[in-house]
Image (cartoon, rainbow, N blue to C red; front, side, top):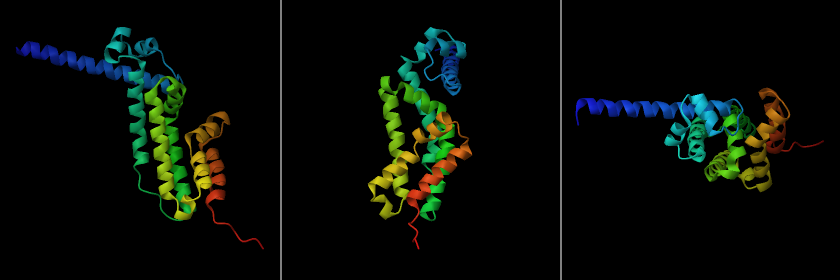
Length: 199
């Protein structure tokens, strides 16, 4: 191959990579703005590419959602890989709540979009299950043995520290981050705090 043909190929690859990145960023930005199911035409317009370019890079919208799901998981990974909480069970709960609130604030638009489209995307449904299972396992590992054996308490804490609860408090009930944390903390500490002797 001549130098000029190599340069042409390299240029095409760079342009193709740039187009793909613009498409992914367009999809991400539309979701962040509250569009839970952007159409391919909307993505193309935002990315300033033709519709054919979108489908040249992504076979269908499912494959584009996979890309967005991967971005969301990348944002979540630092929170999932943190060291196990330490201290008393109450302190551990407060640390988990702080971590979850920061995670959920970061991924809220992506998670809402994933939930809205999970019924038609096996990948998104599996991705949601993986994250939920991972968070539940982190919770179980942080609990002392006596609480870990109590299925009702584990299930209650899992629901309390879930994205669904966070979304309800923040979006449906319109609470601030601080207010939502106070509500969850009040309920969570009531579950994990040792019973006090009544006189």
